Picture (cartoon, one colour):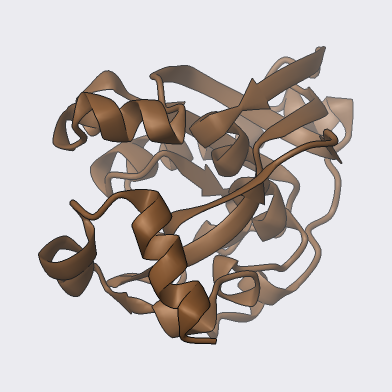
Length: 197
């Protein structure tokens, strides 16, 4: 079932979501929520969807970066972003650790802030301890775009939107991003907005 995605201003997007018990995770209600969230994410389309984005304040997100989503990127852009396909998986009650090292800035958008995008700094490498949809412990080590997706979705579980982290002067419509910035090398985009501070 396709769910309605909450937009910025909805109270669920600004609350810290509650953890789920193993019993809840294994129950029918959460199983149905995961199925509906997956369908909703794919319909949007998006690479991740957190439960608060559909008005359910629990610490759960679905993530999938399909190979067809990379089709609009050149090989250079995909390499620059370290973006590769990520299979569908569920993270529940995640604990994020930012690994020491580089922070990178790329344009980032959100299904709950529709139509807009902005340069957003994120750690290049992270690790996440979480439970899967069977309440089994998992440990994820991610870098590049996958690390960005994890940080973005876990932010949602803490009541944070990318607009809280973005470079404000870079905010633009998705349409204008495509028109003016999409094919500009990322380093040049960063220099442009850094020079305008």
